[in-house]
Length: 408
Image (cartoon, rainbow, N blue to C red; front, top):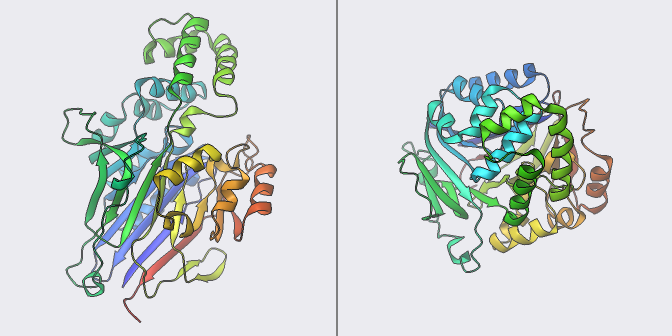
């Protein structure tokens, strides 16, 4: 048997999602999507300890990082220390200008030095914490590249999947970005095309939204002009925030609103991850044991959205890249983006995902942002084809899973 346990962990205003695959021969595979929180650290510290225990203290196989806001990454360092590192870290590539914007966002909120260090040099931060290989994902703008988006996958052999010598071997069939070369054999760059999988039975598919470069450049220009900062770098920004906090807050907020409106560019760099089975298991069951025994025999895909603004433009981009309808029809668990904040999901998106059984909203009880917003809850309730809305808070974890036993 192959047993798969998946969990939105109880960390409050943040995100910490984990998966642990166990084979009957004793082999194991684990992955994490984000690890951070603005709620009391005792909640996420407890969940990190639980995850390390549940994964038998073994090194994480794949660490996914959605984007660079503190409530998604401020415990990455602690997680890697506790777990002994990770084989792979997969995260969106940010330009130097985008990293500076992320740094400003985090520095304004008074974040910890560990998070600021990660944003200033994500590659160095991860390698120093025992990550063996780093993969950066870039958005693809190539109209003719979809032929590379669904590589051939070998049909699985049921006997091999349950054999004593089975191992959770990684298969990387992403499209390389040959324009990027850091000269470091541990760092590679790929587009959000193709798939990343565990042998031929479970896949991870990525989406990274195209960014509006002109708006970002206007923002940088406005910031230089209004704040009188000529060398737009980490040190000068840090010095200005420290010595002119009131001026920075008022001017920066005006500049930010002018350029980005309701959106947040760093949120829109979020790496969206679909994961699910590559095969039609003859026998698989999912359950939610925090609430009640609930079984699903059907779709087994999960969509993890980080804080992306999932509007019509985003839906158009993702459907253009994910040309196989299974990436929409197979989704049973949908993570509502940005903790249920206003403007971050629209009714056509809710209606597009017709087979969702659970709409999961990660948020902290008593958070100052008033997440989730009632307007978002109403949009989901009015436009979903089916499914339940579930809150994942510091007191409500959400667990589910699947198991494979071979042919009936």
